[in-house]
Length: 163
Image (cartoon, rainbow, N blue to C red; front, side, top):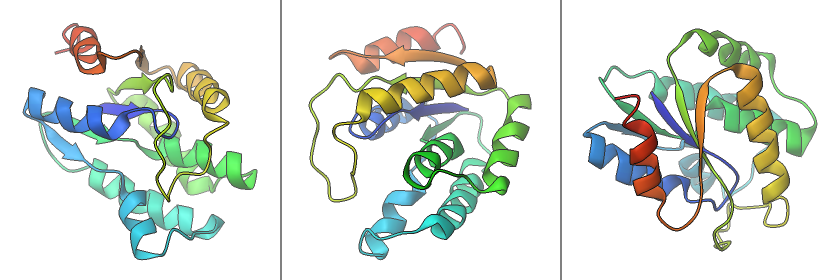
């Protein structure tokens, strides 16, 4: 599994789509985006568990190569940032994923912010990026930082050592 992650408006979705095509892999979209569209961009702490459970189901489809546009770690970081806590189910699943082979591409927010009604944290992107970096180190998963203008080529270069 390849997980493209990072703060809002850092190029995750574009990179995920491009990588899944390049690798001929299964793309797992960010469930939260559709959920928020259906719910007028409103949610509460309890909704994050439902979002997480659906994201987890999507991510665990069978395929040789899976490219995920975010994962449960995004929901954990967002939950703790927004509500100061995270549901135990989410934390337990993330902990269990330590045993899986997961490769993370952490997108640095060094590109221009793009407005989107679902986005909330234009000014906190660097702070949230550093939280991702810290959490990925704690989890022990292999990760690379994707930055600059040529993100797809950088990701391909890093992933060539894995695939």
